[in-house]
Amino acid sequence: MTVLAWAAVAVFLCAYALIASEKVHRVAAALGGAGIMLLIHATDASAAFFSEETGIDWNVIFLLLGMMVIVGVLKQTGVFEYLAIWAAKRAKGRPYRLMVLLVVITALASALLDNVTTVLLIAPVTFLVCERLALPAVPFLIAEAMASNIGGAATLVGDPPNIIIASRGGLSFNDFLVHMAPMVITLMIVFIGLCRVLFRKAFTYDPARAAEVMALDEREAIADRRLLWQSLTVLALVMAAFVLHPVLHYEPSVVAILGAGVLVAATKVTTSDAIREVEWPTLVFFAGLFIMVGALVHTGVIEQVSQAAADATQGRLGLTTMVLLGASGLLSAIVDNIPYVATMSPIVADLVQAAGGHEHAQVLWWALAFGADLGGNATAVGAAANVVVIGIAARNGTPISFWQFTRYGLIVTAVTIGLCAPYLWLSYLV
Image (cartoon, rainbow, N blue to C red; front, side, top):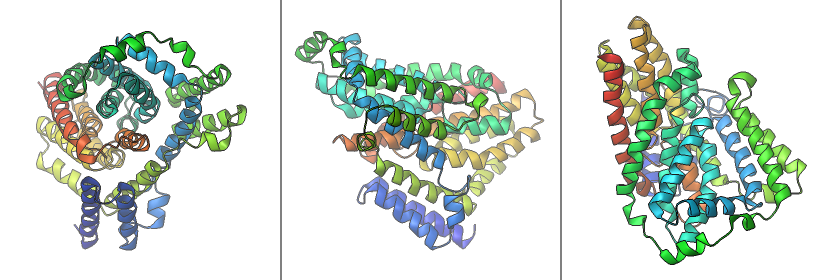
């Protein structure tokens, strides 16, 4: 690697260490790292702000902004209080049952929508229901973030890396359902079992609180029925447009911004009320992180690491699959999986062609998808959903530290990727 590439690695590692140690606020660390990358010319203004491969992913930023505005309006209707009481009553006030219900809903929604939108919608419900039952919200939020990443792996639209993989590999929506969804269902069953062990200290049952919740009428929580129907109509249209992206060809960010604009314009909600729930620090943190990771792409660091892993396998399909799965999981835990997959997908395409392009060689695409999607669970900054959940938690006065998330994430990632290895081997390589 060049001197500039090594310098970019050093800056990234220093910023990452500051984020992990929490000695400096994560926003300051990300912006500082991005500024230094620009200062040393590891990237430039054109690459940082305008390039699709090495710049800020404005689709992610504006998707988040639009959905945060929609969620902010929805919050005023009382619908999250309604859902919180409904969920608590269905779980009969039992904490573990409640967690199972919330993570299953999160995983299913993430398979149809993108996982970031899902956690934006489910987090407010989680805070309210935990407050009702006197439960700590943090374990539930961490579990939901991880469930969103697992569930999002099931479909083409569930996680942004899957869209990149589908485009480069010529894969369809049905291909993901056939090859990814069955294993994702298995992983969710295992994850639900892991939740029982990992978060067992949070499952303190309070009979008095449970009885109080069971006596509530969730319908009384709705504060503004007219605004609720207006908001739900817009949200339904936004979700439909997300699912119909392959037909409509509108980016999710465009759909979210249009939905937010229509909702604010068509209702009595003021602009200041609508943007009050926007997590500005989270958006700025993403911008800084995208610039730093983009600098690693711009200087060729990620491509060289990926190419070295590919060269080490010497064209053996089985070994290549396992290395690709493990390396994707490791690298996606450290850098955002979107630029990683964008960089790695041309290499995988070459490897598939080198293996003859036959059906068995398609296993390389599934190894890349599983590794990138599930590796995002390993650390607090490994996936967009994780960062959003941490931002929401901090805003609500229950901060989640880097290591508080990561100590659970490393276990979940190791187990889920570990289970994917024999699945891929037995399904495609034997």
